[in-house]
Length: 122
Image (tube, rainbow, N blue to C red; front, side, top):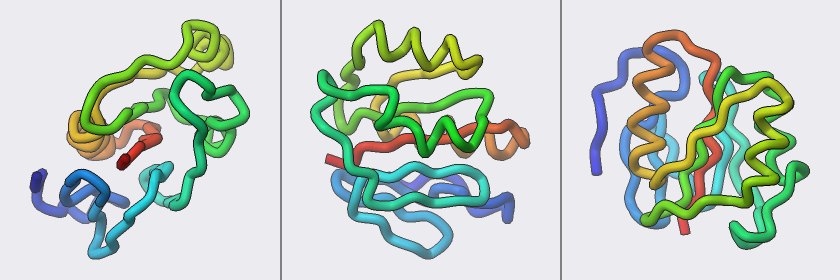
């Protein structure tokens, strides 16, 4: 699914398909954490049920306003305890399908918001 044309504003996501994220001419075939100026490919995570705050540390270290957690082709929520822990750090978290997280990421980057996408590509 192709998203928006590249506006030159950092790491805009060009498209997402099951197993693949395209951004700025780069193709990523693994889970990834993406900010406006950084890409952490090969984000290794356990199952969604086993996620911990330590798994989100690369995203937290970027000090975003919000983390968009893309959970693949279906929306799956992590534990309430994990979401609460992230919010207690002063960071909002939104959980959605990866395609929706990619589109939302582009919108927020275009608004120059401090956003990080933590994306599962399944």
